Image (tube, rainbow, N blue to C red; front, side, top):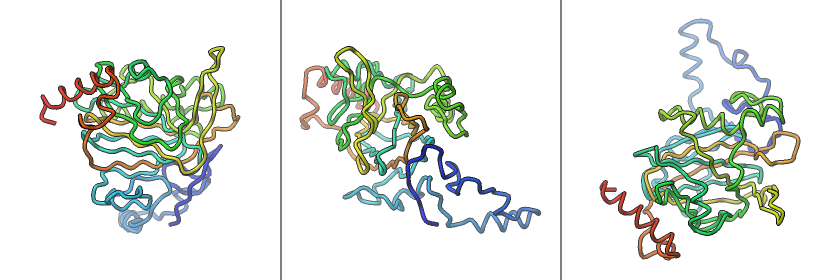
Length: 303
């Protein structure tokens, strides 16, 4: 099956199956008996949808340049209006790619060992004295530790101010916020992802988003700047064991009337955390302290 990627205001492909909108499963499958159902199920082997995890990850058709396929531990194309989640080891490299210029990767991070420790957006802006995300920017927890750091960024269009969309917001703007509908909210998708790890509504903090920029004007107004165009990427280093939740949904400040969001590619591969010999470990007194806190926590647990 040919994989097709593209942005959508009303997704032309079903987010779950990758089939053309309007196609009906019952029209494509023969399941009138147990034997027919079994034969039909086995006949689907080898088929691939446009939006899917690649298993094994080494089989991804979009492997990042220079990455050994054997090192990949996660490879997935997330649908417009879709979500994903993963637990990653300390030192893992995590890369997001925006192939069309319309992806919007809303991100939540948790300490995978103790999820009560989670991304703190206020500290993420305050500790490095910089509100705009970019290369070498730490993503900090409320416990003064570095959950992850942005190690590479070719987009420069990100947001640590607005968080993601809510059901109420999407219902007002698009008329629908159902997770399975044409315009799911980021909050709704995060709830589904969180539930798979025993977390609920009260466990979800504000997050950050990549590929759709927001700037603060002189009068304090938040202004949406959109994406940087197709083909950009962001890479993170997991400085602690991470639970990663991702919702690929339209940005709340996107002024376009339709629900516009493109596919998101996700890859992760084994690596090492930032070491004390790397410049960002001691880039500022505040960041140095955060890295020392992180190393102390991880080394005590043999990580």
